[in-house]
Length: 356
Image (tube, rainbow, N blue to C red; front, side, top):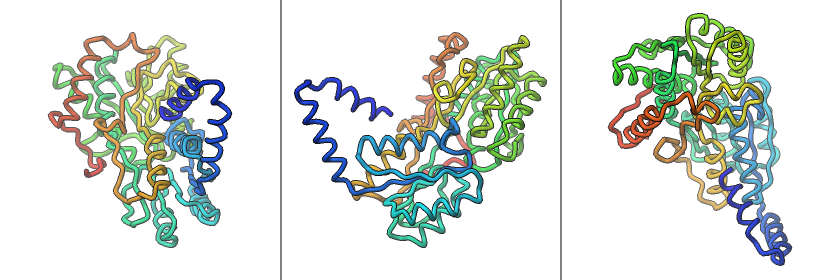
């Protein structure tokens, strides 16, 4: 999106008499690129307000900025993965981006059967093939900041998190969040309680899917009843159930907040964004566009792209409407902690963190 904005600003600055020529030049450039980028979603679909949507924005940015053709296949269930990936192969795609850990087996099978087609997979690093590039994130780093923020802003002394399916790309958020809460307690001699996840035991609360808003709402209601006032769902579209529960609780006098994941929820959710304290972001759109760009330039390789705080691949979102809930002291501490994580002075560890 930053790249798109830059191009738009550049267009606004052009002299009027050059506009037609510039447009003709851009059209000629776009027409000269014989390249098709394709994308297959996880079962949440491209409007999940989360990682599918962010990845899709990356390929559409590549379409606008590079002039490539784009095709997509939206999955509604795991049974769609195979047919959708195969349909993209049949379409003659130059690169196929698959979104999500659950697409790993399907992607590996298709890539092995089609060695002349390049693949990129978001949130998975299990495939070791020359034509597959993993796009992965050390989200524990940014989630650590979110956990510290939650512990530093809770009014009840209790915060919570839950996941969709217990897979590494989910638990890595929960590990980082737990460590951030623990670090706050250590630094402040506090006793903020975390519900929904035991990092040491690797056990916690999960809905079992990325679809059931009702389960997300029920989990959140249970957490609020147990005293939690800040909840971080790591469950894609299921998180909308958390927002609904928070809206209802706040209408009854509570002051609960949500920490979103993957994208900046304040900008992507359809309702209730005023209750989003912050978000643990994976900048997937930028990574997808970058990987496609390297393929267009014939410089594709299968070295994993690893998003970190240092390279801007992961980040804590702005506080938006909740800025007044975060003290200047806490904001300064978060800056120091981020610098400490980047320098290695603060070590954030998760079993699911990618090895660099």
